[in-house]
Image (cartoon, rainbow, N blue to C red; front, top):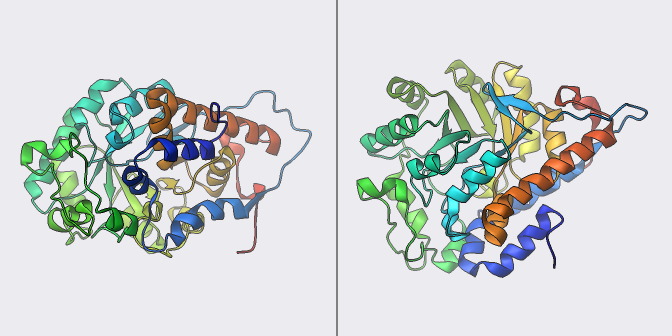
Length: 361
């Protein structure tokens, strides 16, 4: 295979290049992985209704999220342990995101420190937070991110405990030598203990991440820093309502890429309901199953401000490092522009639900 022509081909190449345990860690989902598959299929079930004889000579796909300018409605989702894909890990991703003028959301469980990621580029970035049982650790992580110039805090709220990822259980997933959770090094929490017959990350999460979180965490976080808060992992409109009441700046509609609770509703269905609940009060984003520019167009038409990609940029990173991530983003950019032209819409503001038809399940 030559240079990939789409994101699916990057996955095929990445599977050949990555060790099986690393590929399974990225690709796998919870239990039977129905939700992983559904995330892809649900975007495909939505059909587009093009308009014709529209002047589409100039297409503008720029947008803003939390007031930050993006060159297109795509962002880098937080994914842990990017060094499993490439030695430069999150730092290579940071440079690619900056070059393409989009936001990188860096993970708590990154394989480089949040300071190293910030130093890797002058681009825009948010910090994704897992809350630790030791609130002093959580406080320090958040304040380090703010000091390093991260512009928003992305609080993941769908992991009171880690979903059962059976690929990781079969592989006894364990970060290989030379790879650790570098952000946690100063707290001596950077090396998950080996767990034969289980995932070391699942064992680590059960021991270290705070499963007692309630909505009280939001005012506490606001009391220790000034970054806007975005909640990642919301599916229920009732939770979106509570989030708005708590004054969050945004919501990422997400089922964690199918890696937490299997057979949840898809993010396309949840997105529609949460956009309606939010009624324009805050920015709504979405992730899960985005593989084509048409998926992004559909997400915007449903009311999202942007879509986040996770696995696809990891496949690009595995195949060709920073250049691979950039190419993944460029492929998406070109597909979005082409899709906009072919549906007869010239700006993102022109995208609405009149463009969409919903197929049968």
